[in-house]
Length: 539
Image 1 (cartoon, rainbow, N blue to C red):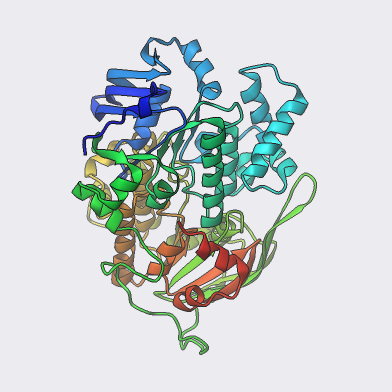
Image 2 (image 1 turned 45 degrees about the vertical axis):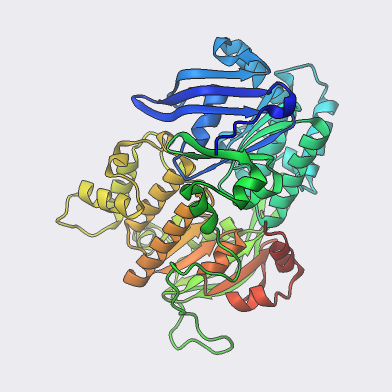
């Protein structure tokens, strides 16, 4: 599809011609040509590692990661950005062009309260009184679905859930009403209800304020909901572009067709996935004791003004070889529950039994044994790696610390693990910032699998991946479960994905389990309003 868009008779706000860019000796983007008109939303979709995030970094001239623009031009409102000085680019960022990164940790300073970051961003581009800043920040946070804007403004990013931090980052990017918003997977950390809400906010910005957007996403539903036009990128090249509705309805390229065909749908599991029902039959006790039992566990945090109840009297079991899903809205306690199970947090009440032994407060040898039996893949893959260590060094560390001695050299074991998650062995020498979000997530999965755990906890482990790679990773996890008898605890806000791979699910709301049972039964006849809202909001 050769259409490049004539911007509906108006001059393009953003125009990219023949852009080539990369890192070191590697060229990632090749001959990229795109246009975005004022008030237009252009969606960029492609496989993990195709160059989507690199494109946004090239537009914003973010060179801290070693990015080099080799050829081509980028014009904003007719102005050649390659001729801008560092100071001129600084004035453009925030005021004229805003950016939302895939992970809120890349947008938010962990040492500054959210309110302070609003003040710093706005005062860097103008003179604003404290009252104006607070009013603008509170307005945006309320539009992002926060009912307690004052609390969020007073909070540090690390005290917020992934979805809450991402919404705060989006609000921060919009503080100065930029004419162009660059958004890298802005809704990937959000549940379906909040995803729709945030997309509606972005549509309002486009319709009422004329804000143009370059939206990177692997979620085809997001494209359908908001994009005017779409472009498909593969190996750093645009292979197809045109009107979003037409491209999604009648894709011409095989890669686009594969992306569309691999979208999981509720009640329609992929035939390529392994499905072996292992849960105890509904309403009857399991013959074997549970591998993991959470007994009346609660967890609270003491905030500046009040106690925050993150987990409230949670009780559930996970059986051998079972695939259990945990689903809930952003901030419902999903990630906190995962950290309790891995010993990263200590509950304020209750017991957590692993093979009948209480693991609460485990230390020393018991703590190491816990790490060997229970591994976790975090939501923020980049943040889970030491940025000063290569990917290979991180995986090697797990092998040395948690795995029994093996005659096979460690570097060979690392290469084999990378191959299992479809990463080249050469990635062992790369650093986290040198690979895409999806590639980094696969490397994190390889690191966790190095210990051959009995339980693998996946906290939004596929949220950064396009649907084709997502399906491959899920297939890989289920294959490993089948071969090694591993249990999976799958935490996600993606109900279609959870429905395609889990035996049972738990629905969380404000730290409480409000509904649990067989996946098919819950999705067919949900009893709780929260479950129904999550189902109704799926894009």
